[in-house]
Image (cartoon, rainbow, N blue to C red; front, side, top):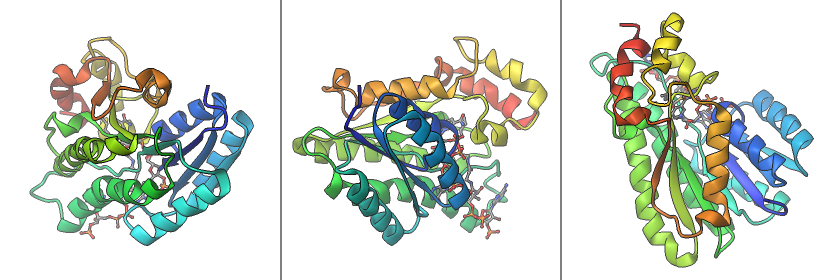
Length: 260
Ligand code: HXC
Ligand code: NAP
């Protein structure tokens, strides 16, 4: 379905983003990923090379504009114009605002929000125009306030506004921009950091209307939908992939996640 398409995934070396990368690779895409750690990049490229036609890896900290610019340019030189761009690098930890240092707040906003801007800003010149699809990875925290998550709530809300403003700015160039919002996804770093008391996993699942935690494949399938021709008239949307969790259960779940 994505044969001869180049899919570039910022922060695509683990968890949900790697699951999305694997989905595209298995569907025939040339996939490029980058993140900070060489060992994670090498492992991801090896796994993606087994699934798809060709994979490419790079190193960059999304907080560093020049690194992002160079790494994206190298990916485009190696694999061609970018048909699908996924921006998913993120950081998270539980920290009440009253004890959170300015650098802690700035680190998460710097990775999630500034990083997303850097990735989109420096990928634009390499996008297939018209036709490219951009998917920003957001979180329910963008509109569901959660205690000890002030940094993530602020950053992800900002990402969703970037999605909407750039959908307006870049629509005339034939570029679609959407947010994909994972819910609580099992077996990921994000869940591990927020679910303090692991014995509460089953109780957490009950706060999801569909009655289960998500899987990375749930996100990969929707990412492929958003990137496909089936979504050709979809731009500027914030699409939850959360089993209905953000309708109310996410707020209830904070007790489980905080161990309270
Ligand atoms: C309070 C903390 C902290 C914690 C770090 N800091 N961890 N403060 N509680 N648990 C503070 C540090 O003290 C420091 O501030 C500042 O944050 C930066 O920390 P560094 O370790 O120097 O930063 P860095 O090496 O750049 O690492 C960034 C990071 C790290 C975000 C802190 O955790 C990381 O690299 N995370 C990437 C992986 C990740 O988080 N994945 C989960 C994504 S899930 P001071 O003032 O001391 O200098 C997600 C949403 C999940 O995003 C939603 C689920 C529903
Ligand atoms: P993860 O495995 O920790 O993935 C984060 C990725 O970003 C890794 O590849 C990491 O690789 C990279 N990264 C982190 N900081 C970076 C930086 N400064 N520069 C470049 N790359 C960086 O986390 P996950 O739980 O799967 O989350 C993936 C995405 O889904 C995130 O956007 C997250 O906010 C979102 N999300 C997750 C959940 C969930 O249930 N897990 C729920 C809602 C939203 P390196 O360490 O090598 O840099």
